[in-house]
Image (spheres, rainbow, N blue to C red):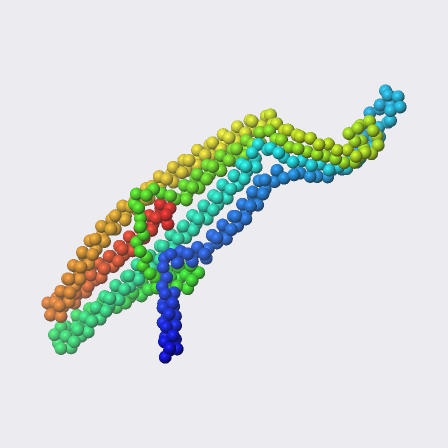
Amino acid sequence: MKKYLLLSCFLFSLVCFVFSQNVVTIEQCQEWAVAQSSANVQKELNDKLLKVKLNNAASHIFPKLEINGEAAYHSDVPQLYRYVAGADTFNNHQYFIGIDFEQVVFEGGKLYYGRRYEKLANQAEIYKVEISINEMKEQIISLYLNLLILDKHLNILNNAEDLLQKQLAQLNTLQANGIIPSSSVSQLEVEMMKVGQNKGELQAKKESLIASLSILTGKDLSQAEFAIPEVPDVDLNSPSARLEYKIFENGKQTMEFQRKLHLSNSLPRLSIFATGGYGRPNYNFFNPNFKWYYEVGVRVNIPLIDWAKSTGVSNVINLQKAILSSQENDFAKGNNIAIQEKRFEIKRIEDMLVLDKQITEKQKEITNAFSIQLLNGTITAYDYIKQQNDETQSLINQEMHSIQLLKAKYELLALTGRL
């Protein structure tokens, strides 16, 4: 008995698990779509690319070490023996092989500015990837909520079809007893055919949306049930936090570091160096023999006339920043207009939903009254069908407006950058 009880519990848990897996949420679809996309791969590749660029930006401070060699023949050499008694004659053949070392100590901040520039440029690419992710989420929301609208529409038509079926059965009985004409029955039958035709069209659209959603998520959703999401909390007065604003700000900072990076080329450069080798002549030019030699020291380079080019680059960057600021203003204006319109749309739909509920209740009362009148023969089947359609349409309007309110609030979240 204990074994049967454990087995029953296991089967019940398994059924609950399978059932729970068959119901999907809008958040799950978004997560699957993001995981299915190349966004994560792009971020990982951008991280690797940033490391390479940071190394390249610091490459100029790495020690410089190179081997130099030379074999040369000079057509003329100093003739000291003519002026100094007993002086050796210089050889026309000169040879040397040596090694040179240089280490930059100060380069005008080029390392810092270069690395900051690369980090900002990389961050801009990350922002673009995140914007593409948000666009993907918006696409999922649109498909998902349109599916819910079709589901609601189909459910309403199924209920209407059931009511027509019951009404038709009663009319068939009345017609068989000769109480009502056969035309009344035919009218209901035609109306049922129209409902079935409408259901077929909606089912085809639903299957198309599910197929699109399956492609985006990488999941087979043909047998899934789609849960109705809760209405998201939306602050109608919250300012926009779109990633585009971060891109504009990032662009300005990038240009500023680009300016500083170029100006660093005009600053003094300090380095230490060492060189050594073996050859003829060495640093003692009066010794014509092969000898070892070396030199160590500090080198300072001070650019003198690079300021003209630096001024030109700075002016170009100022103009580019002005253009970027104007583009940001245009985007902010368009974004604020869209946010304001969406706020009015949400308020309009909320007002419509209040009336929808009142209209639906009244339509149900009228339909119930018409149903009794039809059976009593005081109205025609056409009158009943028209009223039934009015009630169905009022239910459809109420359900559509409730989903439209969901959609509008999600769209407002997207417009304000809080999706």
